[in-house]
Image 1 (cartoon, rainbow, N blue to C red):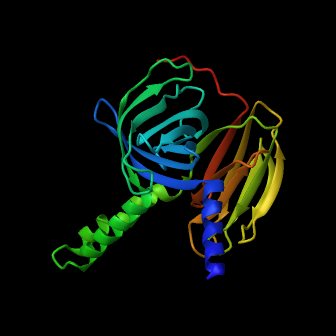
Image 2: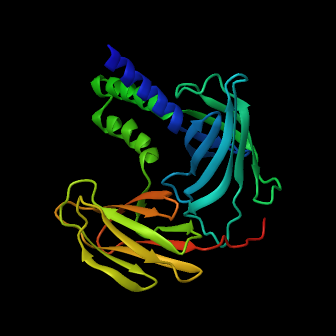
Length: 297
């Protein structure tokens, strides 16, 4: 009995020390009624919120930003704002980024309640850009609801198999699950450190995929086959803009060519990615020491 109490105490204490992690999925609705996929991934520690937002995840303009805020459980008030760009698929040298600021009521921060309300958008200099509405639900709750609905679809005899394939909620949910990079895509990353740790491995079935990896045109891996053991490299970013390219040169036994990639900075912050390439396809990671100055529209 004492052992059980000790275990319960340790679980509770660890949760208080490191904070509760929350994941929310949903949409941003803009004034022209267009909808943009939006994901929040954050921790709450003593009422303070730290984490990340993902706008248009796996889309053409996927953007990850740091988020800070607070939750007042007495007032049921949630506030958060995007404060710093991490990466984007948009052209960083031509895009003015509009940061989301949200302030709204939330019944309870428990991984079940919805996050809904109006948001305001501000540029880095705090001049206003675009406002809209935000609609989000807990990721776990969405997944359970989708699984239940998918089972009903799969069991019914009234829906043709061709339609069942189109109504695949797992595929829809997976858009939010991980950020896959496809051939020809470029990820623009704001990176102030002089060094980065690159980690690469195969987190699925190891089937003989091969890649070439270069930095600023200099090859650092030649016909390398990722395996389940993580390969780590410390790279120096000498220029103000540095480019790392990953190219698929062999698809292995089971196409496509896949690899799990992490970029780790000196403070331990991680950018977690995955590549999904056909033969001779390439993805590029462009690291900027400073955010390019862009004239606002």
